[in-house]
Length: 325
Figure 1 (tube, one colour):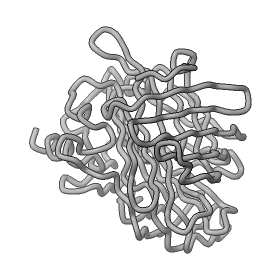
Figure 2 (cartoon, rainbow, N blue to C red; figure 1 turned 120 degrees about the vertical axis):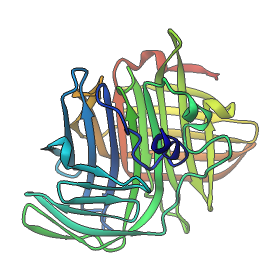
Figure 3 (tube, rainbow, N blue to C red; figure 1 turned 30 degrees about the vertical axis):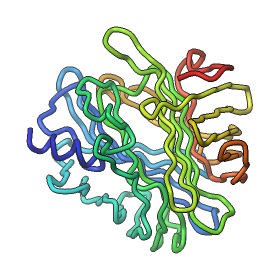
């Protein structure tokens, strides 16, 4: 109980203490080289099925070749720290400070600097806001770092790749299952003098026998993370087309308009009641046109590259042509 309470106030940490079934937890490390010619998503995690069968895993997605490899481990090899976000998984090391891999196809020792964490508030320890304290959510979400610089190199299938000066992003999910349907996008590759980063998620959220459409959006601009979320009172619009996703979010002061263009991706494995039997197609080759307004004044306009994009499940009920909460 003490460990779970500590993790509640530190979303980066492992939350599954005492859980034995119908549970998953995973972290998403996105790394892109400085020249943007190499991009990977590395996802370590643990899965506990309804019957109590457990295993740990590391998924590795080559974003440029659009391939994925699933490395499976014994649950005993999943060793999270009780004090901070630090994970040893089969001799591979994961933390907010870096990533060390020793797998047959990929090896690296990467360090991260200049991390931009999600801002904490008294009633909102992470991106979930006060929903962080609700004990029966289907899926919880956390952002460990919206933007950071990578140091080191990486070997993939015997080829050495230089990641010095590259860009990274780090988030996580935990709970029983991914949502019934969702739209997620992320990019922190913009042509701008200071770091700019976007993460946006809209999803079907089960709630006390019913459901609602929830959304959590963060936009890092000129040193501040602007939040648009169900719990902040923001409003949203969303439309889906064959080649793109359009979303807008606004509050009393700011408006964020996004157009994400789809690109080739690959299937990642996703959890259903703790069992890794779902699939979701993800690309890290998408691009997102971003326009950010203060009142009616356009204060930022640019296109984010190397964007992560997922459109999962039957997303029809997520869409709305008029502003709604």
